Length: 478
Ligand SMILES: NC(=O)c1ccc[n+]([C@@H]2O[C@H](COP(=O)([O-])OP(=O)(O)OC[C@H]3O[C@@H](n4cnc5c(N)ncnc54)[C@H](O)[C@@H]3O)[C@@H](O)[C@H]2O)c1
Image 1 (cartoon, rainbow, N blue to C red):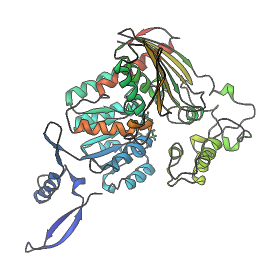
Image 2 (image 1 turned 180 degrees about the horizontal axis):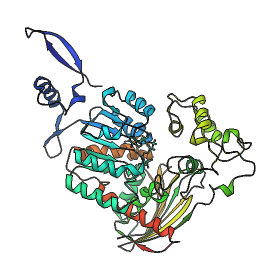
Image 3 (image 1 turned 90 degrees about the horizontal axis):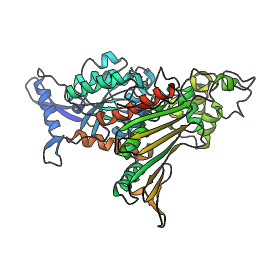
Image 4 (image 1 turned 90 degrees about the vertical axis):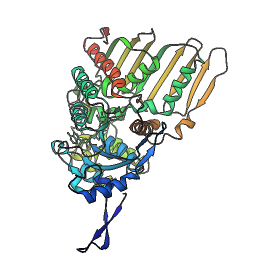
């Protein structure tokens, strides 16, 4: 935490001691009726200036408020921002879960007067320069519009919304208040995907004709997030093709360099249903006779896997099922004994699909397909770009892209040079996104994942879901 010292005078105006105070945390909220304090804050804040690329004097460090201190808001962006103190300074947190609020309030050293349990109280006034919105899918638009009204620049988690009308409402507010909104399409900043774009743009494989992509959700991730967890139910959260695959759809339209004109989709929930429950299985794993043998046993997914990776103090998905830090076997067991993550996967209130196929045509004639499946041993995405003079293979769990120019030797392109600056999760995408967000804050450069740029993939997802419900009907996007 950055601490400034204030001189305090006695009755005769003589300086007698220094009092510690966190003036940066007060900026920019000191009112005019506290002139001394305001002058001090201004002096401290004067150190918070720098020249940008155009030679303009701009703000260097931004105060940050976070609403939604979970895996993304607390564990990912919060921690990354907290470690970049010369750029970001977390001054307020809001979460309606008291345990999460305490955990991340403590981690980010936020004074208790700036921790908010209630969204309404939090949104009474602006609490910082920047707001990170990382609550659940259906809260994003309401909170983003209020944040725009209050004058925040915003880092907004995806999905923006599942509702087309809300897309328009938010866009109107964004144009009216003219603040910066960057959407967390983190893969755009991940090294493998950045490199693929460079190779495509270089045209060494000729013109792009078609893209084939697979989203491998992984069997236990499906069970964790989309059967037992937050995203299991499309009414409570959003459809799978939006919540999980808006990244993929965003990447496809980005690589295709065109607007998607038509889309069709098929998909179902095949496996995680009551009919597939083994005879005699219990409703909760720890009471079930199949606890040692079931593929989706919560004991093996949480306790077993956590042990197999060396029982880390803090790691996803274990930290998503218990607020306990450091993690312990006892806390994980308790979470699966009483919490939602210990339920039988065949007896949850889930309705999102476990496999789905989408086909797309873009206005420049490029075609693409996306296959999302829960039934993979590992996670990660695979993309294959078919071009007139060669193909490019991308597998985001690896460190290489393979360029196969026709009649030429295969080339392995290492993405580590880009990865070195990436850091953290999503193949370096989370760190890359924050670097871009900061660049946007200190300049008038548009973000590649600005609100306007990001709405296209959301419209594609909304149409894909409509098509799926209509049994695969071909639909126009606009
Ligand atoms: N960019 C990505 O790749 C990516 C990855 C995973 C999740 N997400 C998205 O990020 C968002 C958050 O996901 P998460 O995994 O962090 O979930 P999470 O459940 O771990 O965190 C959400 C937090 O928000 C809090 N919250 C919810 N509603 C609130 C409200 N009205 N006021 C205050 N606090 C509230 C919850 O208590 C929780 O702590 C979701 O929309 C999700 O779809 C994005």
